[in-house]
Image 1: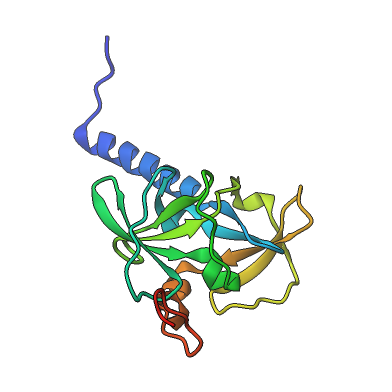
Image 2: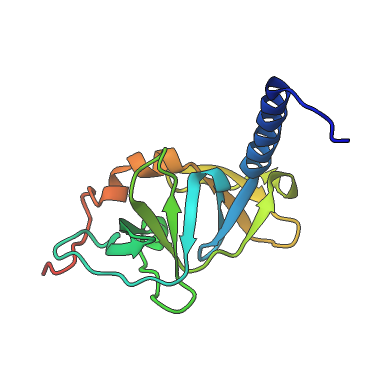
Length: 177
């Protein structure tokens, strides 16, 4: 005979499961490449990763703004993370990906990344001392299998930085001479 559960008990159990799943998701970081270090982004700051996409350039846009892409039927503005980090454009090869940012941070915006290197739980990293060079860099960590520092990105600070929107005294623009 099947066990009967009240609606209230069912809702409480469901709420507990959802809270556990949410907590587990919050404790994982995406690992992204950078020239002399790795970048870490909390999984909760991303809503999707697109492997196949076409970019349509926007004339006279800042260099960091790589264009527009259709991701799952949504028009997404694409910002080049490599440009923000070190003023080099991400190559548009087969490995390039769009990391769509969570809508709680900003709507219809993605970061162009060379590739996602991996996903690791928070516990896999140990804090370390390392100079942070950008306002959105929050803390440096070491991964157990990599000598390069891993720098945690604060996405809320990243999207409010003037460089994110190309509002910077040294910004270059596509199509400008």
